[in-house]
Length: 185
Image (tube, rainbow, N blue to C red; front, side):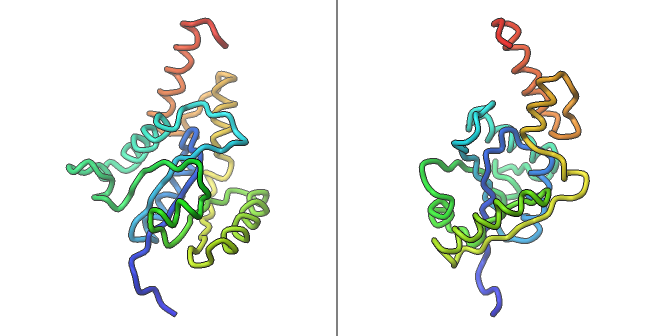
């Protein structure tokens, strides 16, 4: 059995905010698949700090900060090889089918991620076994990087530049300034 058609990977998450760990997974996916579609979604178990549209914007800006060559004259990322979208009110598999994904990409940081991903892998395979799930393990420097950690450290006044790109760090600073201006913590 061999690959005979173009591959398209879906990497979905809340990306609230996008981290350097997420970018590591995106980079690995770009090296592996013909097209990568990154979709910002809403996790009903998590309260969002940034809205979906703002997260999409920060995602695109982080990608072009990380890889300046990603920006193209046509307005696409890497000449259309990297797409950014939004999914809501549907399963991950339904969204993957809708965009024509052949694979779903997931990132693994630590052993505790494995149990949740193992379960998701099993469920996804039962729904549609033709859409393969691929897991990338983050580089060592990103194993402790998460959106939650960025939010928590920022709330405590700690620097988060090692977790996120400068545009995301600036968005956190703008959010803090806005909160101070209206007198909310």
